[in-house]
Image (cartoon, rainbow, N blue to C red):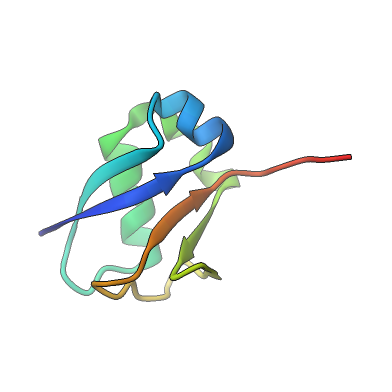
Length: 82
């Protein structure tokens, strides 16, 4: 397991009470592994995770994509604007 930091924005940071979350993920983790680890580390986010996207290295990533050891990870919740 490796500890990584996930940046949180908008409702995700409000629910977590912070703007960064430390998670433990396996070596060669996928985006799906990261999402599962976020839910374990912060159960308050669990209901929102299916609506969120994960950005890896400042680009949206698909569930099966791998997460490199040095890439920035950010949880992007749904947004609205007008």
